[in-house]
Amino acid sequence: MKLNTSFPKTLAITASILVAATLSACQPASNNSTSSEIVSANAEDISTANKAFSQFSESFIEQFWQLNPGYGVYVGFYKYDDVLPIPNAETKQRDLAFYQQQLAMLNAINPELLSPSNASDFYILKNQLESGIWSSNELKSGQWNPSNYNVAGVFGVILNTDYKPLNERLQTIIKRMENIPAYYKAAQQNLINPTLTHTQLALQQSAGTAGLFKTSIAEKVKSSSLSAQDKELFAQRLAETNKAINGYITWLEAKAVELEQSTTAKDFRIGKDLYKQKFKLDIFSGYTADELFAKAVSEKKRVHQEMIKIADKLWPKYFDGIEKPQDKLVMIKKVIDHISVKHVKRDDFVSSIREQIPELEAFVLKHDLITMDKDKPLVVRETPEYQRGFAGASINAPGPYDAEANTYYNVTPLDNFNDEQAESYLREYNHWLLQVLNIHEAVPGHYTQLVHSNKSKSLVKSIFGNGAMIEGWAVYTERMMLEEGYGDNEPELWLMYYKWNLRVIMNAILDYSIQVNGLTEAEALDMMINQAFQEKSEATGKWRRATLSQVQLTSYFTGYSEIYQLREELKQATGDKFNLKEFHDQFLSYGSAPVPIIKKLMFDDYVNSHK
Image 1 (cartoon, one colour):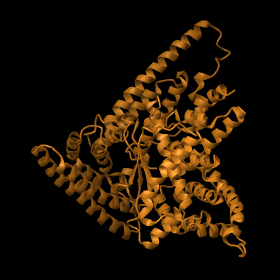
Image 2: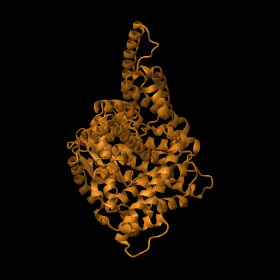
Image 3: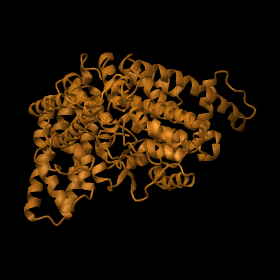
Image 4: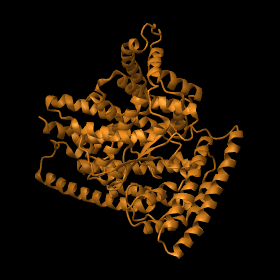
């Protein structure tokens, strides 16, 4: 799943810091506290600190939306929906100064005096600010990633979300369009050292952006009851917008040719030092980047062993009388290749996903696995063109300010594939894997989790959702559903699940290997195809994605590992009193917070309530 925002949403903090400081206010009073005066003074200090933090948090969020109105639209905060910031040097300096000022104010509050919930919010905001400062001063992706500059997303949300009457939304769009020429002019000035891969992505997406204005928005304006004056202003700004976007596309095309011919063009890899720091800031985990990589390598070996057992049992069913290959990985691949021919038709890909969602909902309800909210709609749709090129399936979910809006399950049709590519893609997302995909993206994965997240009492946890928790939850639900009997323990489904899970593990291995160790495309494809049993189309797409992002691919494995570990620890602590639905509901009640924070908030409470 991919969410678009100009400010780092992923959060980070080491577990050691969290244990040492975040919740120290919850520990028993020190034996050195011998006077009632000290206890009274501490109680007053605690109240003062919590009040100060609440005021800071409220003020910060309000100012944050003024600086990041586009992200506000994504989460349903529409107060500044008509503002399109121009990403020039002045804006960058303003934002950096704001983050530095806010961090200084936050550090003036003693987190040891805060309540558990406020203490966790404190470190989430601290990390957000530190991440923003680091991104501006060190990562500097605005200088090398042209795909950072794309106005389409927010305009698409405004157009397609009924948060106010259509005419008013169209007037908002017209007003936002005023800054589009300056926006793309600033983009070109910022991009002093673009990479070829990000330039190519920007070219693909910018074509979709142009189409959004020339078709979808233009048609809505034409058929609307806007005044003649408004329509005339739109026509003027549409001409300016088309010129600006087409100018950016022309610039990108020339830059792509230049980069293809250059021997000194910037590498898409960010290197070891930046990678480790980005991992620390983006992924909230007790693992370092090196430790997570080692864990993934170990887990790959374990999953291979599970797959060997299943493939051994399935071999006689599909290859009766044929000798098994000596190489066990070859045996697994042969079984997977043989059964992968069972898949939907090319033209039915999107509709088949749409039809399967009610089946998953019915299973969850029948087995009482998690609370479902039938009043929060899920809409399966074809991925808008301006969002294509990064992931084949994704979720666009409303934020806590507009939780009643639609959640969109974006599925990219196979229109741009030739017959060979389409067949490879459909074999990858075969009869069994398509079910696992829908569990991950929809029910009870991303869609279900984000509905719960929007009900969290903490705006901080809901707004600044932790990517590892969000992706980890979706991966966790895949295994949980099969453990609870989904698919009737069909060995083919379990084999495909492990193949899918191996993809999650391989994501972490690939990301580190490519960005830090310089893994080549040929080496990466060999690893994915022959060790993770992926189809060539999937492997090729994952290579491209790994060249366009850094660290995000590790979030799946990190979050999944920590959620599953938390569940097993609670099972051990509560024995036969453990209740799976109650665990799920309570876990999700904390919003999209990092797993270590959720663990500290819920562990003792869950254990005490299930004695």
